[in-house]
Length: 160
Image (cartoon, rainbow, N blue to C red; front, side, top):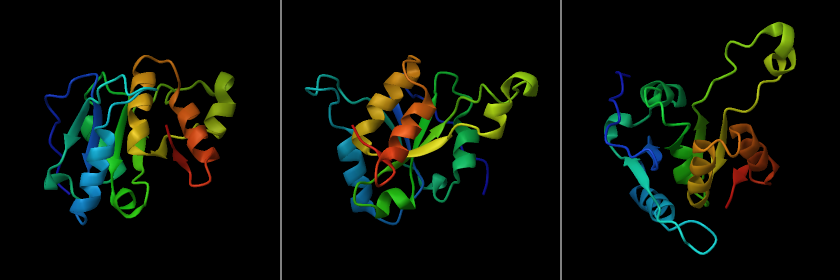
């Protein structure tokens, strides 16, 4: 696969969703519709999303997407609409952690984290992505906490 293009024009408050599967247009429309709904307890917050819907991203791996979006210093999470997203009833997006603060951990002090690193991905319904993005952006919740919540769900999916 060739190098993926840089994503430009994304507002720092907008959730980034990258489409990598182009087999089911109806499923993609359902993902976009659900992610576009206002969020918050009473729908108090307008949904701000930046959709990357370009076939050049078709089949892109999680690693390739991370490499392509890593230049955006304001971004702490990216959501991928992959084949699993399109085939599942809940259209759960793949959430990928972009903060790798512990890559250079000193083994003397952080052996437990080195031996059992926190999860770097989980599945999230489109309705839950806004809460994830907002809380990670202000460092209110850590990525691994969302991942733990998703893993506690019977389907392994974070829900609002």
